[in-house]
Length: 409
Image (cartoon, rainbow, N blue to C red; front, side, top):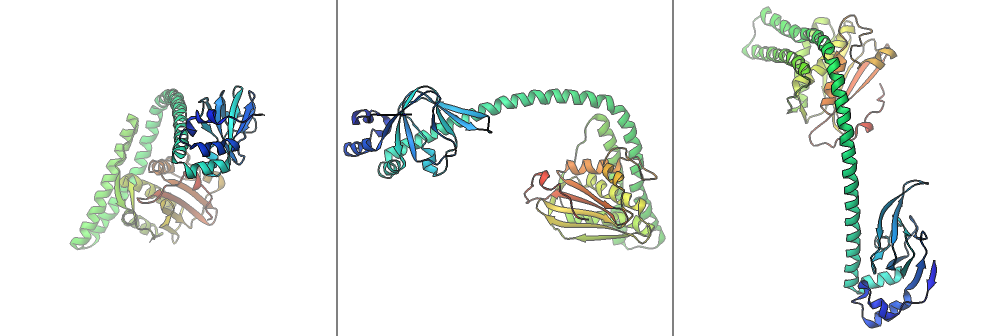
């Protein structure tokens, strides 16, 4: 940087930013302004330094750069407007420089101190307006550059996504026939659950006289099980066609969990296992309740396979940051590490005497479809817990990574 002789008042007046400054003030300002020359690639402003002045470009071109890391920087743009301002944003914000300015060619600039800048802003509205225009112009150019970068990156992502989709479709086509056969056996396995419930309530109806209210209640439960039975067959058809459609509605989560409890209670009582319900959250969620019932039911059925008479299975709800946390737990034998690590994998059946190994895979898929998170905790000799976090209406959904943390058993 070379300090040059002071710029005459007549030349100062030719600069747009000083057009409306009175003669007496302009003479005083000329004494406060320094005239400098910068050679090509010489640093004019260093990023992160505190701003103590702003600059007016007389001739040449400067480059705006943002440091990415210790070795690399990104060019944000160029500035070559004679009489244009740069470096004023740090003074306006009273913060360190957000980017560096480098002479892209040999350049001459005027340097105006922070004291002079504040005096001009306070006394001359037209100067303030010129500063605002300059800031606005820079922001528009920055926005346009970002938009162009995003459009270019979006096109690249779209191209990559299309290639990935083609590869995925080809893989799905090759695997679908074999999966349909295994899914069919799973549906047949799962059908026993609603059929068992229907049979259980049919036996209850036959055992003694019941009031109209009790009969209506039992009929409603049987009807719901028939609907779920039909939905399972629809699932198989949807899978065979390559997609599944959810029937989302807004429901009260405590009412839904109470219905699950009532529907499963006969099977637990028949096995001598205690089923308890502890509802501590009243709120609404967006849910396909028929599909999500299978989540509750599949986990409960897995527990029934291993729980001995006198043991306990519980359903609990509570409030968390995302909305509602549903805990399905038991005090059974727990899972060995190998079983726990593979519990959600398709067709994993180790440790069970029956089943196709799709129950928990379906559980995880349905929870994912509802933008939820499921976490498994299990300890041999202590028991097992499935913790499900679901977004509730009126709650802020946090990133999944913030919820995927170990939960003490």
